[in-house]
Image 1: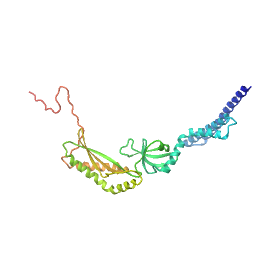
Image 2: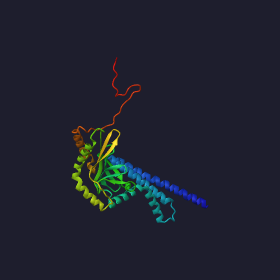
Image 3: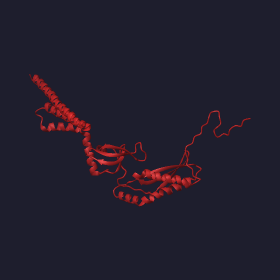
Image 4: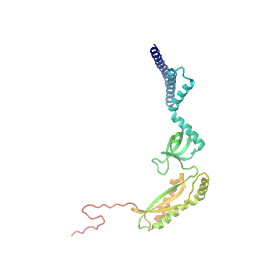
Length: 299
């Protein structure tokens, strides 16, 4: 008798569950039909249809839970089950909201900053509840130039990805330009010319850079002993490599590099004892002399 009561109870719950599903999706079908007839805008029509489907699914799940849960279960238990389900389903949105709060409180970046989060780099153009909009730089474009694409990065990434801020606190970055001259060139003169050109740009930035370093040292454990440009020397396979290292504003890296390279080309062009080096190759054929051997005279 007891088993029969249990089986009948389960049977009724199955029937009620199926009826609830049918009724809910029947009304959802009618609403979607009305939307298709009345709404003309395709984007809005699609959004309303998806919203109707989500609401119908949520109602079905809630109804089935209420049907199958025991009557003796307290309201707290019901709320806990629903809350746990919502937390699992809404994990990403909740994390994004928490990330948004962290951005507002700690301010690792704000609108206008140039940042990099994981593989995303660009200028922050908007910060919303769920995501940060970034105008992309780099990717297939060289020297941190804009690609024109807008990337919507979930705010939850601030908990899992490192954040690089190019413009907050210290808006200057170190850039390097590598020049290779031949071994026969007067590389010391070339080094002096490159350093002189690099120092001209630093004269305009010197006071600003020192002020920013002093301001940052009050907040961070940061120290730069040398801020002026420097040229490093290195011997490579096909010549002497001279690397100019200098400070520049993050958003002006390409323009300053262009100006410096033009000055170097103009100055080197006036020097007869300085020549650019580049990799060269010699081909030798088996059974023949090298390409450098003089041609044989015919008898």
